[in-house]
Length: 398
Image (cartoon, rainbow, N blue to C red; front, side, top):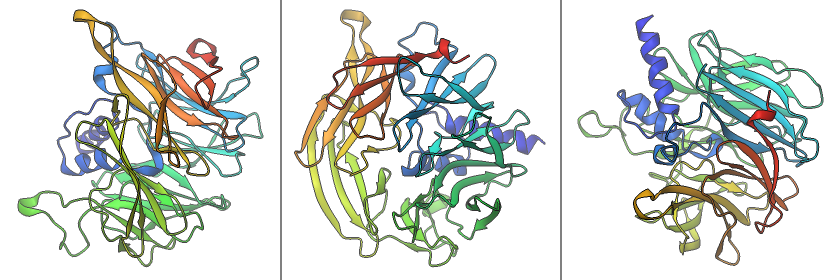
């Protein structure tokens, strides 16, 4: 039992918003890989939370918009008592109609919408300290169903297949093993994919042919670092049946990526101080790279834990947050503002002024953006930053 308690504590630390050191090597890797493509939340830096003399007990953690654009999934956190709640909210400001679909002790990544927008998957730490995947049918006024509740294991960062029939996720168990699991949604049949590379959050290719993930080492130990150190992370792809696993050439240490086409990843990197942005494609077959944007100057430092790269459906625009100084004199602290990057024009636009705007997400129509203000309220705005409207706040989620 003590080993299980130690494992749980490591998982909780690895998922916390502040970038603390994690004692176990596997947990250190998990803390790194949980910042990879298919399931990041929008956890903010601890110095941002220090804007508050007394950090609020309740806050909004994550926001994701449905592909149809009429619904938004909101994850909230209460510290006392420890509780994470997932809500479905209608995006119309005059009638938000929030619906609670799942609750647990802690969130393990943002809710993910099925491609047709009619279902939502969320992963939470349950009250009995086990991990759960909750499936909510957005067409029914009911709570979510726990479709996966593995004993002594914690499922995290699920991803839908393009046709919405399968789910794949990253899972960690009480034996310190991290692996991928896949489910046939109709039958609820779950099986573990055969990988020993301590995988990070997975992502399906647009055609469903491959699943990509970040991993380290190899089954025969050839990738192990010197003196027991972790080997450098790199990307891998495999077929959904677990066969054909192989490394993606020229992908070492990539941490920010999404699928851009059937065989190319869109990757982004930032300069040494985080205020320059570069974007390139990576061919998963050849490892060939093509620069799309190099050294674009940003109005502030790109937040390292700002969540997944929020690309619009056509992969033409990117949302993110930047850290900006707030206040003057001796009261200067760090705030955050939402920015968008136009890939074709190579320009960046600051959409909000802060001091605490975060979690940006494209709405389904591509003409509106949802975001969180002051860790407390859901807002919607036009893509140029105009027409900012408050939808609802934490007090409305009761």
